[in-house]
Length: 165
Image (cartoon, rainbow, N blue to C red; front, side, top):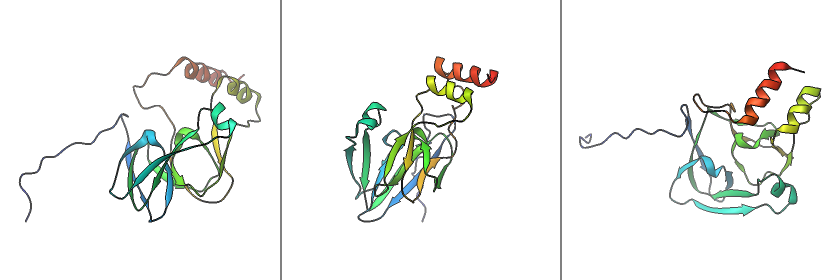
């Protein structure tokens, strides 16, 4: 018998376009989850913060990691669709979740073209590089949602890219 007294609640997010993704964490499993994208989680989930003490993580302002212990499910929200990828290097902002047994380090872009090298001087782009095999949940695209204003640095980078010195 269906209930007749329900109320429909629309779920929206910060971005004009967005997607939700669940991450199922097995019993005893520990996953890093991007806390900025965490919407909710089920009973049984325990959360703590892991702090990376290596100086490079502190210099690049990426030193607090939200770790979720299973069993349970975490719900994430992002700008674009999600996908599990086995690539080794990702922009920090694109990474949504990965098993904490994976080892990672930080790196910067290593371009071969002079214009790209020049852009990197003005860029604060940081990549996480996994040094072992495994999959990471990432956003498929890293782009500004429609209507969001670009900051001065992004405008300058777009102009430099357009001019292609």
